[in-house]
Image (cartoon, rainbow, N blue to C red):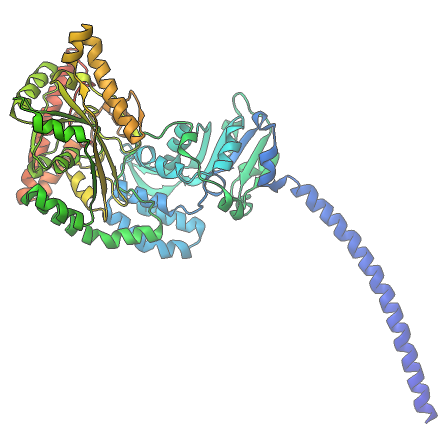
Length: 598
């Protein structure tokens, strides 16, 4: 018993001192560990103290003295998804089949990772695209990119000195948007490899150091400030050379407001492309599923408009989904009843789509004569109203319009080309010399899926694309009549100045009614921006032009379609020679009036 008590006593004593010494040793080790951790934390903080949250950047007042380097996808745009922009490239530059392939590959793009997914989209969208004729980055993408810019980040960039945009996308997709519309000084992007003038769908490796030297050249370069996402800090070496880096989180981007149109450094007046919706993966899938039904619906709508009278076809077309609103002043109806003049009436409207004269005919429930300009043969055949082409000769066109007014009412579009945005182009004054009765007509249209106009595509498909929309909206508002040039010249005697006054008055009246801004831009300005030419097709200068495309289609199509394309190609050549003769005598085409589908 004593032995057991003695063993228990020594065992208890051992565990007591063991626990005491163990706790003491543990405290000493913990103290040493804390000191080590503090030193490590200090070193970590010393290394990463330049990384700060984005909201603190909003309060800095010295940004004008710094170079701002920002990540386009992860800091400038509210959405980090690149699929919509590649879908636009696939659909607009590559065609419908390429867009379908990109949508089918989207699950693999998500599973392959960010870098490999980007390479898959680049290969799908750019392989086989001619490098010189690629204009989607200039004419299509800026609209969709501007609509995704955060207002808060734009205000920060606007206060900066030199501004540098860094992107993982190919540079040809974003350079025009950044330089022309946001006034960014330098763009660092991926270069596409080209073989025999065609993209092969591969990107060169980033040349960061070369880009850094170019950024540091010139005036205004001082300490660089980086703006990017925390997960993308090490993706580009440019941010490692920044003195401070501000991190943009997804929560920050969700709280941003979209940059309003009035805050754009450069107004977005012209843009091209068929797609009106932002082609996200779900929207793209819905669009492709709707496409077969849209083609059938468009054929039905065209057949109804061609075969039935206005009073019968109008309610049926509205039943198919077309939203059509009209506004006719009371003075107009009473004037028509008391009007016994032999000459017809002149309607002057702004130009939204190819269907402007047709919708005016639906609103008035009578046939009109439309003066056309560069209208395709297919559109001319399908038009349910009479269309007459201009010759681009001022005296001949004036004489022809006078003769047409003796046959009935006439519709003209003085802008000479369409404009999708809320702006009015310069009105040609030729219509002011035609007759005493001039009625301005304010036209407006809205689409949800496809645009019914194009500058670089096939213009003969413009009405088809417009009628493929599920519920296209069109509004026609007839305004109060204005006095013509003949009545004004009798009063003031200055005929030359009065003709411009009448044109400006009609433009201002339509602009005020629609809430559109009046500009002095012309058809020439539009095509220089969107297509890189003056809106005159030349088969000699343009290797990728519409004339060559029409000849290629002649070899592929058969029957009626082949004949239609042959007629269109012949008209293009005739138009080119007329314009060539006109330019040799120093004439201008800016005065041309017409119904243009471009």
